[in-house]
Length: 500
Ligand SMILES: [Zn+2]
Image (cartoon, rainbow, N blue to C red; front, side, top):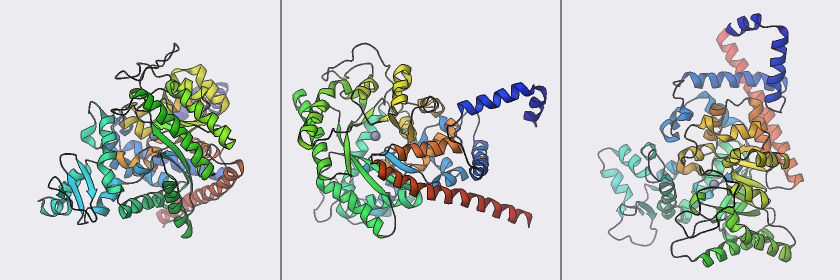
């Protein structure tokens, strides 16, 4: 009604100009008649989720673990769970799944132990633990409150509400990988966990393609992940896989600077070797870990260039780079970048987006710093360099406390190609990519056309040949059309029920 009154007070000219302007700044994708009807349903779901929140303190302004269950309880979550999502382009395999489910799958095993001094878990199989280890089944059965004990143990491997104001959330985040390693290293539990994770993406979350950021993978681990995908295919569950070879940008304790340079160079060369051995599965290289405590892209550029020369000389291809960069709150600078690796921090500015561009990165993981360099951002836009945006990760790790202010929306509206990704959902408690879609929709008021655009970006910028991408797009389009039709059928059935 308010809108109608305002419209009556305005000249037709103004209303028409406003309509033109809105179309200019909106998503570049046009929706079909059917999609526009589903867009109306989608807008109702967004409004319903908004009504469940305090307008002055919405969920997207709260630490994700505090409001995780609220997100998951919405009809908007159920809608976005079912929507065909194309490709997940940025996820780390050991943290790609659900640690709640992992804990429940092993906590009844007699060889499942917890070490309070290291806060870590382990499955002992045939070996005997020493006194430092406590039996997890006994801890659970002897506790007066079983559920509270379960929660307190899971708190060691999933970031929870109590972690919100930690001084160094990255230290806690990285410790979790060590605490959970003794569970994932068990052949049965580790295989079951990764299988369940792929199954969840493919079946429950309607993801068609996954690209893993794997830490220095061996031939055996490439075959392990491909074997999981093949076994799903054997059951009629289709999901395709690519692997990016990663190493850490940290100078490890006791590692010399020369040792570091040598490790990065050799890792990048190993990425090329593995690409040659597994063409079409291993697709490139990356370095990760907390950027502002590790080597800058500028520092590592000579190592990456050397590896690229090697891959060209040895195999005749240039090693593609999918770089974790621009995940920082440091200011960007247009002066020379610091190159020291020996200080407590390499520098106080983060210029990695500049060097990711110069290094010719195919895509950049995060890239949120790009918003501070608009001229450079326009180059990313015009050259179609894709940013793999991970909203929950960016919030939990402290870069963007209020997701309404996440740079991704500005970058997206400026023509930069982005996609939505989960990064390490097991540790954040999101268990997959759907929660990232929910927070992005609510924080940035995305339309169905925006969502379709982001999903199509993920397919178009996957590490695949043009033919493979066309095939992936075709199979996604069939699922998308089915999804749109099923939404309309469900709406009609609800209308019929109401009118009976
Ligand atoms: Zn990552």
